[in-house]
Image 1 (cartoon, helix red, strand yellow):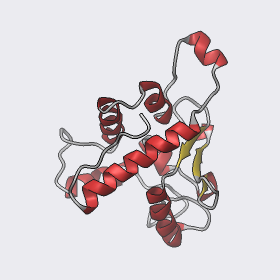
Image 2: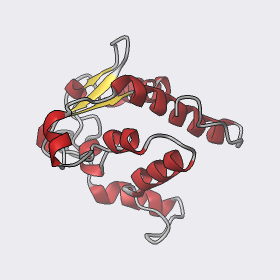
Image 3: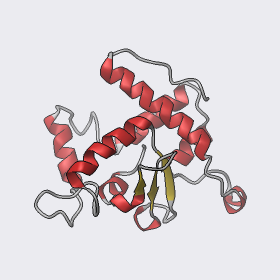
Image 4: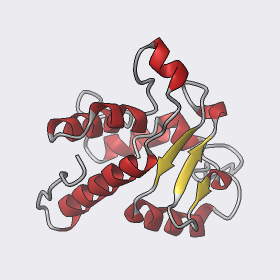
Length: 168
């Protein structure tokens, strides 16, 4: 979903609409780097994972709470420690690094840089463009995120690379 670690850690179930025809995660401005709300289209695979997680940590409160204090978000060190237990060193991977990986791979195979930037919740365009362009490109970003989720599924299930093209 290309969210920043802090956005993931502080996610509330009230921010995520899994029942909509086109499910979304509405990241509130209080947790985003740009202090602007950010809408994240959810691919069916992400919805399935979140629904499973909802059974563990829902229906209200934090999506990723601490085990000792469910009113507090999981710490950044918890995720970093999990990566280290999986065998990744700090030089090999960080959880913020997933944003870099997705951005790089999507651009390499031809997805529009502006679309990738919008998914990353980065400012797009010059000052004038930012002042006037309030579009979020949700349908196109939804297609990109579906292609990304299908790509990851292909790696996980079959250990085969599937095409990320199709909406570029």
